[in-house]
Amino acid sequence: DAKTTQPPSMDCAEGRAANLPCNHSTISGNEYVYWYRQIHSQGPQYIIHGLKNNETNEMASLIITEDRKSSTLILPHATLRDTAVYYCIVRVASTRGSQGNLIFGKGTKLSVKP
Amino acid sequence: DAMVIQNPRYQVTQFGKPVTLSCSQTLNHNVMYWYQQKSSQAPKLLFHYYDKDFNNEADTPDNFQSRRPNTSFCFLDIRSPGLGDAAMYLCATSRDPPGMGRETQYFGPGTRLLVL
Image (cartoon, rainbow over all chains, first blue to last red; front, side, top):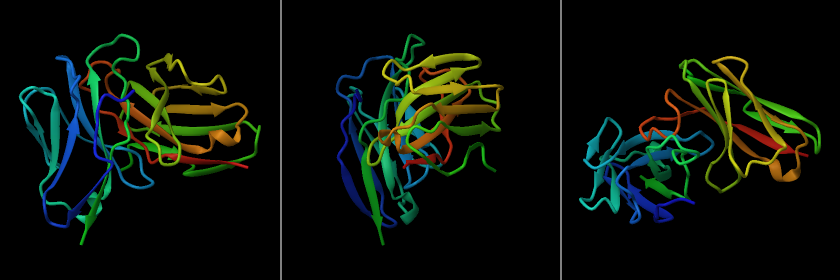
């Protein structure tokens, strides 16, 4: 089962920052927070991941709270092409069994509107 | 340039008629995955290959099989498709095996399977 909770949907105005929250209150010390997104009729696309520190790349920023129980994905200037389902995934760094698999939850459907 | 290629994008088969979906990759990654995504649901892992080692998820039906003849190609075989197997099938690759916690998976565009 997914270990994360996300709002089912969000709207964002084009050009504004999109802030997508994720709760992962049962996260363990060796678990990473990953974000993927899936644009309609396409395969999921990796966005960013982090362990403890905030991370930034060309697509987005990831802010992880100090207690690591929640995080926020920030798209600084959302465009219409950012309309997608955004998945927050917690996964452990372990080679045992299926512990390291990507387990997708329901995600947040982000709609960027003109 | 496409890195994970799935053909065809749409596949129609008949109830009970075996079907094979194809995936190829130009990334030279060690791991290849197959996911099933039913309408309005999240992707669900079926199995993966780490090099030649096959790793099946516990709840993957026996009706689903996979082959990886070489690094670049991986096939999903559905022996006797039922109406409930209609879904998008996603192939993904990663350089490192799942469980290291750091590896990124790269997904193909998917093949949408319709069962008549």
